[in-house]
Image 1 (tube, rainbow, N blue to C red):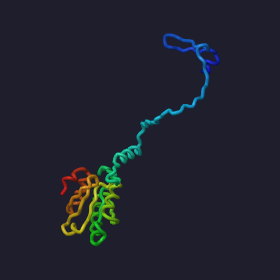
Image 2 (cartoon, rainbow, N blue to C red):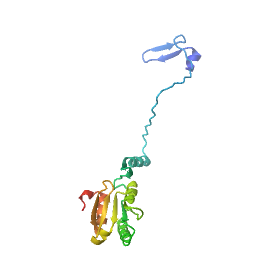
Image 3 (cartoon, one colour):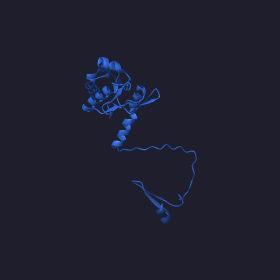
Image 4 (cartoon, helix red, strand yellow):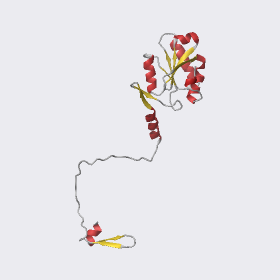
Length: 184
């Protein structure tokens, strides 16, 4: 536009022809306007994908709410903590047996959580919220018959399995080699 003001004309090249615009045909002026009521929807396209964006996408897709409780439904393969171990109550010998089971799971290379506090329902809710796919509960019935209760976070289904089968079963479930519905 400076060329137009200085020289008094502006030449445009339109490929095969040239057009000259003179001050009689056009005027240049600066205007400041306030526009009210215009709706603008901002959007961003971010073509760069770092590990943080992938991590947030995985978390967002895994977040669920069930009966007004938060659940992080991570797939067992990507869940950092694979199994939680609980004694049903803090009475002897349940905590010792639960700790023994937890130690066996850790020796097998599985990251575990041990939680003896509060009611069993609250403990289940806590580990569901942090994405632990399976929970093992040691109870008095299991001390008599050598079994424990295993609970699936996603379906909340529970099955009884032998105490000596726990490590192999959890490893199979985490690796996708076993189906929870087929247990027991």
